[in-house]
Image 1 (tube, rainbow, N blue to C red):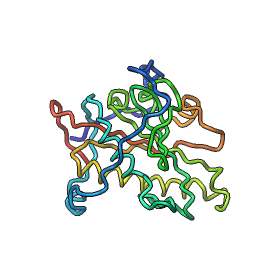
Image 2: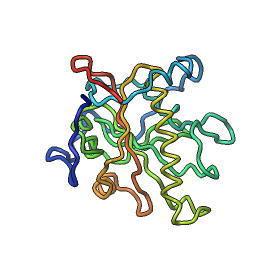
Image 3: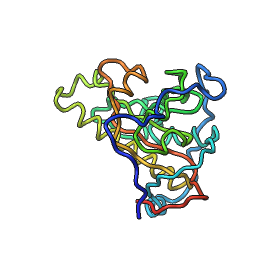
Image 4: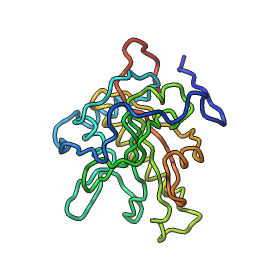
Length: 222
């Protein structure tokens, strides 16, 4: 039986900003990503799955670096090409990393994390019980103001497609490195927008939890 999670119209009672663990550095300089090696792509497809139980163990800096680069990193310098496609090359989706030490925005050009909010916002990134305890919750935020070349009525659908491409990159990375992962579309977007201090034209499209498998509590995955 698949693991059941709570759905609702308001966050869980325990879902609120929490003090950071450790120091909320203004910038986290990531090590250079490892662009070679890894599992063959067909094997990664065979291993791709969603899981909803995570160990609380933090991800090391090398894993975090490789994960973010695989998600939407700069893979074609100097023209700024990225690992994930985007209509018209607008790259309107920003990746926010909700960690115990704060909320950070990924800068794919500098390959670093810049502090956005000095609070632990993991528990606000969804309704499922695991989101506040897993080590990393990624939130994909579309900056609709960047999409001036696309009709206003089509901006969110295009942004959702871009976010979906990033989501699959993360899934394949996790499959290839033995990490647990779950994408989530059930978000309280208004609450997140306030907590994340998002600009008016920005909207959280999807979220994705990443961590190590909880080997003590295995489950069926999808």
